[in-house]
Amino acid sequence: MWFLAVLAVLIILYLGMIAPRMGKRPDYSALFGWHYAHRGLHDNEGEAPENSMAAFRKAVEAGYGIELDVQLSKDRIPVVFHDETLKRVCGAEGKVRDYTYEELKQFTLCQSQEQIPRLADFLEMVDGRVPLIIEIKIHERASVVCEKADALIREYKGAYCIESFHPMAVKWYREHRPEVIRGQLSANFKKSGKEETAAMFLVHYLLTNFLCRPDFIAFDHHHKNSFSRVVNRYLFGALSVAWTIRSQEELAQAEPAFDLFIFEGFLPERSN
Image (cartoon, rainbow, N blue to C red):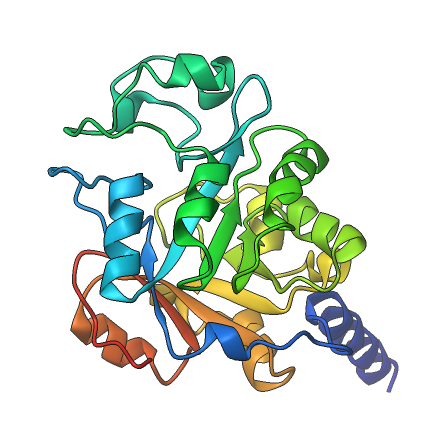
């Protein structure tokens, strides 16, 4: 009997740790009926590379929602860029946060003449025409990045949500902007070919949810059967976001298991 009692306690503790926000959930309706272009409607071999204003304009004009990445420059300007370093996209040395925004303007993206955008310019251009999934990239103290980015995001009038792999960013939104739809990004990192650290293990199994109580779980769609993700969707009713869909076939396979879809490399049929 003692074994069953211990097992019951462990199950209750586990469910309590991974549970999403359960009460006073925000209205998700404005996010539905869209597919979200990963880093814009981009082509890294053309004139509209990832996370560029050209790629974002193309997504807006085509009627797709947008997923984008936000981090800070050296002078604490929120900019739109995915990688921590400039090497892959700009062919330059150093990290984004090693340069002021004015210094970042010397770099171009991939094979284009596009430059790293400011978050402020991106938000002004979109102007509420399509919904946004804003990923907060944490390469330094989470509170600093969230405060600077949110000073702009909170003034935006269109539909959006925020997400991050870093639980402290999601926690910041829980504490400071509880009305905002917030999401925990995750994956089975080991199956993705990465060495799964202790921190990554906790995020993989959503064991940090008790800190941030996310509204949605954004998961690598290849790992849709991850137990904690399944529990969040089917037991707790959390919104479920798939990343990153790369074909119509993958989209069809993911549709039964997810609610929203981030795509790249093809044009899915719009449902809005």
